[in-house]
Length: 210
Image (cartoon, rainbow, N blue to C red; front, side, top):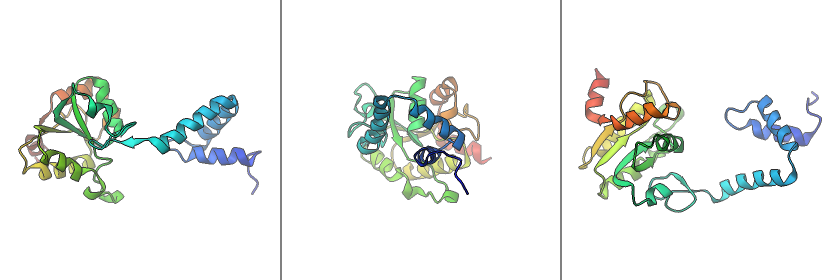
């Protein structure tokens, strides 16, 4: 079957862009044609930024957030409340919560949530390192800010059970974020209020169990 593309180079580039999440072949072709219209210097900057990202990006040794340095700027900020840690699924939730300007503590990025159907268990996530942070002392509250989905609630409960033996308050964001919603898509006002109006996890779990 003949290729619809007039150039193998064009086709290869389209195929690579189409591998990105949410990018179909039509969108991929549009992006590639846009790049072709740019001057060589602009394309070189684009390519260099992607290469530097993959080669030089780091993960914070404390919270596992994406960072340019060994310790991210949030963990290194002396004005943040280091006794409060907000547990999130990934960097997108960190960015969403930071936009609300309602939280001044630190974060802990799990790198996902427990999902047996996808083959993701507790050992695949940064749960053990969270327990180590709590065990080492200095943390008075852990806020669970995972999406209000079955997988999110399963992960919340697992973490709650893991931290029960430590002298730390475990709370969960208020259900201003609707059941089934993803944290990253919540509007800033709703998400901010959910953080401020958080409740102890054991009380929330009793309500969810009814």
